[in-house]
Length: 68
Image (cartoon, rainbow, N blue to C red; front, side):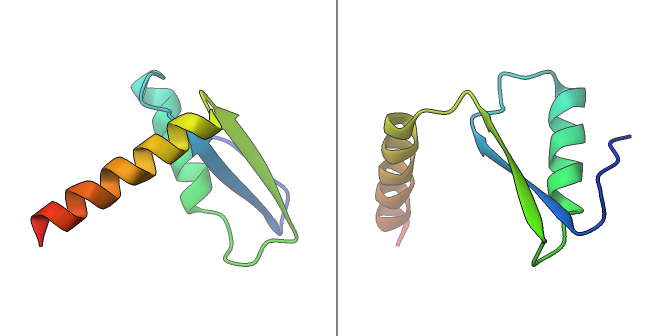
């Protein structure tokens, strides 16, 4: 189990789908256990690329607009 200092938060950005399932669970559990307003936040940028994030956001917007 991952232990973090009190008042700290964890944020995961990027595409974690390529990671093993147990690692994804550890990361998401740690992120979900983070407080709402942490003193500081540790950001894990895994398989992250700005272009990929933009393309992904646009694709989600198009899918939502087509579903309405």
